[in-house]
Image (tube, rainbow, N blue to C red; front, side, top):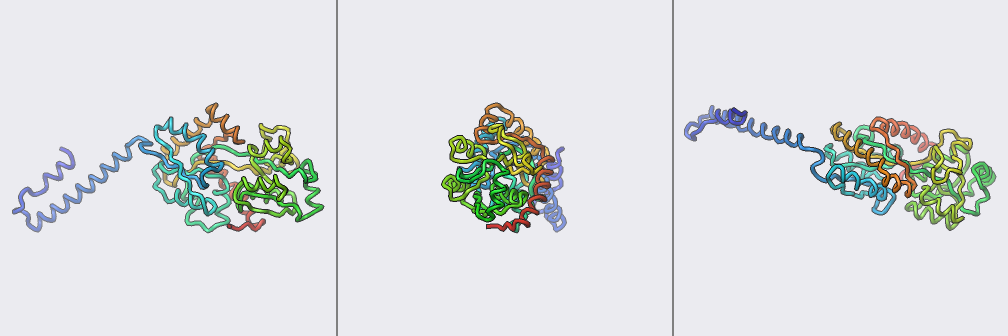
Length: 346
């Protein structure tokens, strides 16, 4: 006999037998049956294969930006292997905090995934007052790719390498401007980090996006930009921008002849930014592992590698544990940088 049938056998069968005692028994049995039904339904839901419905990928940027391009490279592969659509949900604004907050407060069931760039995770907690904790409310899943940055200058700048540029900046403090895509973004942080390490004074000018920032340097309105290799290398080859140094920890395969800032006298300097997936905290470990495994496999596919290279990106797969460690290390570094550079939210 099933538990439900057993509970029903305890219930009185005729209304005229409903004494106060049997009414109490009837109510107790009914409550037990409802609880059993809820538990049973929960068990069936937990046993359902993952994923069994579309997955929402939250992007902290408006449609059309670099984050969207990356998502469009990877998500079709994940859709194929997981058998469910990945729906891109653009939630720009508030420096990425809106998207992170939605993720932090979402159900921990694997159906909400946040595609983050590192600055949202490592800078924003030190710049903004957040309603959530990156460490406690977001679960790292996988480090996906890195985006090398190149320090470029307008051709009018009288320096052909990093040593000459630093000398020029020290001779004329406060006269050189460096453009960025916005306060607290990767391009801004790379510039501020370089200023502090090199001991020079450049003026930061924030633009509304990487495109306007690049246009400002191309026109000579600003002199310096830490730009993605994908967008800067064609302009360098056309003679419209001058390459000063690679701002990433290692030389770029797209421009291997360009020395890095690290090897030019500033060991450990790395101004690159990276993409990663995170989910709400308390998402089941099995789901986190599935997302990690399938993402790692997709990033090794030849056509994905080629598409990433065209965007100046390099696959850089990291486990949840490695990603968590990287977030912690960079967050500590950025806390000091934010304080020393006096960076404030817009």
